Length: 314
Ligand code: UT7
Image (cartoon, rainbow, N blue to C red; front, side, top):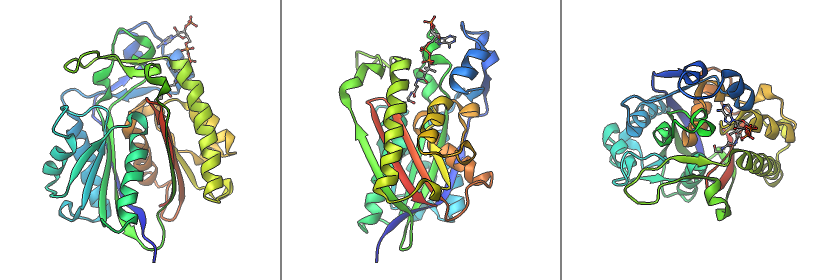
């Protein structure tokens, strides 16, 4: 009998403060037209006083409700975040407390690929038979890392959280996953702090990252389907990282997927880093697009570079 890690609950949370492109026009030298045509973003949410743990808690409560599992039944919590509330303790331990759970909890950092890395990590604990129920969360207050003087990054990001509950299923669940890192591009996308007690700001060579993202994610999508022995036509939904609509369109085109079968939230959320995929997944599920037994392809890339994919039967 096999063990599969199957997603049985999804949840998400967005801070209420909406910032539109025209709000940004008043603050920096940019335009709604530039942001829409280059990225697909129309608006994003920006925290006022909420913490990464606050967002994660709200998203997790919803995922646990859908899964009909009490936090006490969790065996592990993995929180993917680039914006922990403190350097230590891990924000995941505060989330454990807020949820009333008592299991081990740790943070995982792979920037925008964080949710893919966390999902794959959780899968190993379930497949091995060690744990039954795992909460995987992507939560970010990424706008705290933005330099509002830098229009090349300030318009791109937003805040939010998404969560999934995974459980051991003997029939189906995560079918295949791939992870990659290439540490040769440290300064192409990074936070520029030089001292441990400085926070620093995001800096990105946007065009270089764009080209690397299109190439690596397109090749990855093809390889994932090939290695899993799945044809494009069997896929029900692509649930990609939401950085730029043009990157999403290029990857979909590479595997002949109609954009009607791609969950897109970048227009409303901007790039929420590790939160973007679980946010998009929850949107797809709660809007009635994604149904039980649908075959889903998750993929994303971020600083490092680190990137990966997960193929899962929902
Ligand atoms: O999630 C992690 C992975 N991150 C990504 O995947 C992001 C990847 N990169 C991108 O999405 C795109 O490269 C951007 C959206 C960041 C930029 O789009 P682009 O088409 O690559 O534009 P560009 O960087 O080549 O800049 C084109 C022009 C420049 O002006 P000049 O030099 O041509 O006169 C920029 O100064 O656009 C200018 N520009 C802006 N103009 C208005 C850059 N930012 C802005 C802005 N508003 N906010």
